Image 1 (cartoon, helix red, strand yellow):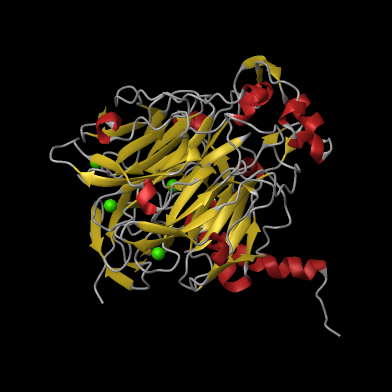
Image 2 (tube, protein in one colour; image 1 turned 90 degrees about the horizontal axis):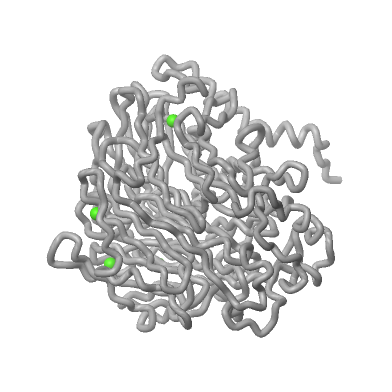
Length: 593
Ligand SMILES: [Ca+2]
Ligand SMILES: [Ca+2]
Ligand SMILES: [Ca+2]
Ligand SMILES: [Ca+2]
């Protein structure tokens, strides 16, 4: 007879790797090389310098078929996105924001390098993307799909996908983009809130995974039925089908969704990719609304397998997937945001420690402050005080309308009703001008190791109560500090410039793929400096409707050198750098065969 350990023993077995992580974190705390940040001394401030930088973007929500006017605030509550790309290749990261109302333009802010930006979307051909018959933008992801050295962009909409090839320009700010959607084979109608670039078969060509929210046969302006909502509050499976497109080269893509087994019809709001189990192949992690998260493990580029990694038991409302090394274990962990509203729905966020290589599972360790970020959306890990430990920025707030009226009571009634009832948008009580978890303040968590995470948003100057959606990070001025850009729903975008108040050291890497995709998307970098070990990944889209700068930033604390950097290129090449110079950006080109 097979002996199964009792629950206490099983818990103890599972707890061991986490304990090891905590002991490591304790060691970091005790180490002489680091002053521990706390709420009183977070070690940085974030200043709202949006207007001084010349960023005046305001997101406008869409309007839809009058048949769903009663709950339009809910259906139209997404679309504020921000993604970072150095589209003109001048070494200064630029910003792209999407808009979601017919006629309202998307915005492309070119970084002048003097702290200001100029808006060039119209001349670039990336402004006028929100029109009847085409759809409205929900977000964008950048990647050099044809490996010509110029970053291209995929815009996902409630409507048709749109792929733009960067054709360059002859003067600064003169870069133009050409719509290549049709010849690429990508003119597909998808009600999408997310997409990521990843090279799942490691052939050096970036492939594309697109998530779908509402069913793909739904045109939100011409509804044949009002039965468009989820069929369960906990395990809904009637969302749009996610799609995987294989890059064939020559500017063409092929739909390989069914062949590869990644056509989830859960209500996916966000995706992120990394090689979680360390077998060399990039996997796909999904945050699904009204359902459990999903992890698709990549079986040698031949197929994906939906894994039982401890994610399937808890159903929540996954809004974003942020990847980062939470406790400096040299692993990429996942932070997934959810809804927390005391008195109604308290789901808690998930901080899932990656124990895939040894235990084939993730382990949720979110508790205390980090678990409750309100109605949370986009999130990102980044070292804002350069002390060598990641902070976590979380945007939140769903619908800020009349502050005296709340839709929560109506929402709780619907959630308790029969699935057939809430699947029909026409049966939901009308929103009117009610708020739903509105006027929430973003959270900025610092990582205190064993003492847990603490929210320092107020202390560091993050006080806005906009309805945050996308969060992206970039060192916009190439000064060794990670700035935070937030796209807010139906409201102005905000640039928080990061000012670390110490002389902590740092190092940044720009990776250029040769055998791997030129953008180096999917490359994972492990840095070792004395007692510090940390892993980061080049971002092909993560968080919610966002993408960080492709350049990787590491804080070093007072450590004055880096021992070793190991780069795991998507091609399989491992490159080791010994003692790179610090306090600067290091450009690394992938070695040839
Ligand atoms: Ca630039
Ligand atoms: Ca290109
Ligand atoms: Ca590929
Ligand atoms: Ca830090």
